[in-house]
Length: 291
Image 1 (tube, rainbow, N blue to C red):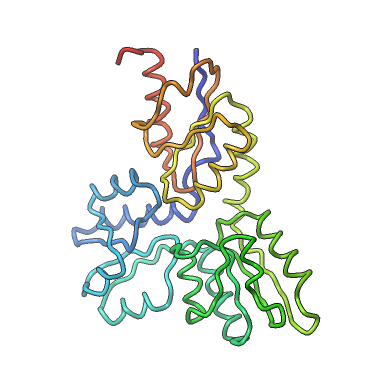
Image 2: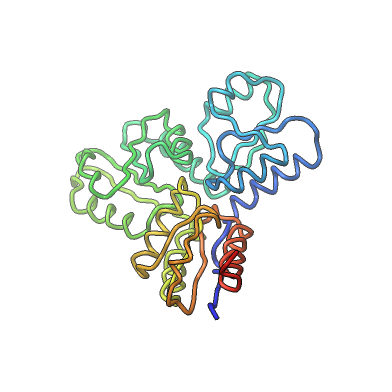
């Protein structure tokens, strides 16, 4: 009999849980339209579930046309320009920015105001919602580094203040710090701030141990999830028989041939109910192969 275990450490992080709870409360307590600026979470199935409850996803162009309504800002956060636009258009903002992200935004804003001529550097994914919100704190002057091999584009004769998107890899962040430390001019200041969320960072070693325990790993995550990519790659490096799916319909039963145990895990944007659906589908197909 195939043994299936769902990873207890997988699923929504605190910030995403709070944003979804705020959305559900608003939808239950009011019949007025509720808009969300961008997907509330990088998971199509959860977005669809909330859409059926009445949550309408919009983009920044849509926001410009809205007036006198309610808009939810998701956990990733937004730049100051978004709040300014909302105020001009008399939009009631329901701010679900993750407290960790909000704190980081404030730190970067303070640093930029104190050192406007320094290089404010953000280790993060270009164009990612959280990173756009962070860069916005510096009037869009911050330099974004996606990978370690981009660090050489910095000017090591000028002051550098290094921050990180909350969901990036700790190991790569430390590599960047070491490189800057060994190249920075004696006349320049370099300071780094470890702003990686531990609730996310601690999932790396935990998910690696989980993946190693099982014959096959099913990683459930939206493919747009930045955090999902990092965690899935970690699973894959530990267990080559790791497969990523967005939903139960993508599961191939051939993956489990000759396996005794299957581990199901996911990203910080993966709802528990989706992992449970995948478990139930595998169980059903195993016990009723003709269905």
